[in-house]
Length: 193
Image (cartoon, rainbow, N blue to C red; front, side, top):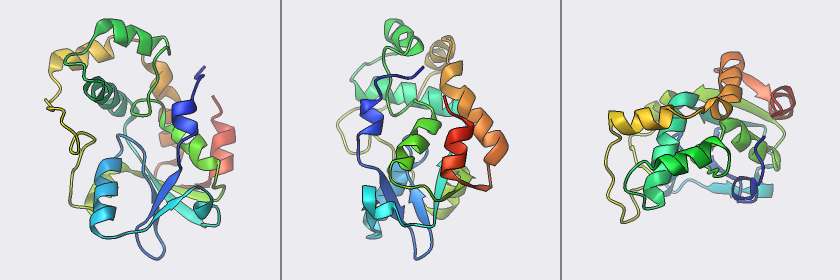
């Protein structure tokens, strides 16, 4: 279903060492900008690729798939300097002609993590992350884009497309594994898309 995932699967796989025993895997639209900014301010180590292969457990913060999809598509429009939600582009997103790390299923992020890590992941709600870090930085904080909050009209436009393929697998993962730990390879195999 999802093809041409070069943008997602060929980038560095990063994990933040939050403390001696906790490691967090940042996923776009799941507090990743806030987490990375916090890590920079606190001088927390950022581990990449093979540096994460020997870790025992990594915490992954998941977000409501529908909420994340809307937010991710809206962020995509802003980051591509589109001043409004364009229905032609939405149609391309619906037909998988445009895919982006901000709105692809969180499952694909887990697939990316598996390139370097096959241990235990602990799945938590992104709300738990916000209890740990005080800042709420967004992907727009370090660039010149003027951010405007999503309007009900824009949200409805995004939700008018068939977005089920973007959220279905994540909903199943959350239903079964939220607030639980699981071997990453088992989860990947169980929910293969």
